[in-house]
Length: 178
Image (cartoon, one colour):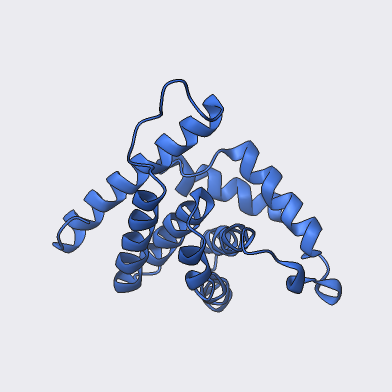
């Protein structure tokens, strides 16, 4: 089930705005599902969730919502349930500012836009950009690089997604850039 949802996400939203590396996200989500036992509702262990796993859980909720957006007929109540679950983790995502938080906020922004929740989407994008600035995504890599080429590439892609989504939101809404 999660594979079909991820396939839909990578074929649609992530192909236009490459926020995530496909292989890495698949691996991280599989690990999270196994660790928290999310595949068995009677055995879920959300109390063992660390603050650093919260953005990945929010990402799982949003990616699931995206997958449900593609189902015909559209499953509005289910989509709303998953988006509400992701949005309920908003404070945690900005409270633990790192790359996965920015990624989760960006994909939440895309989902909120898809649901015509422009005000919440605007706020979420602004938070994503502020967190991106706070962790230095706007800066180029140092020489010699401190991280692997794959991580540096992901950081650059995420920053440019922030930039482009900001410009798109500005054009759509008439609001100023972040």
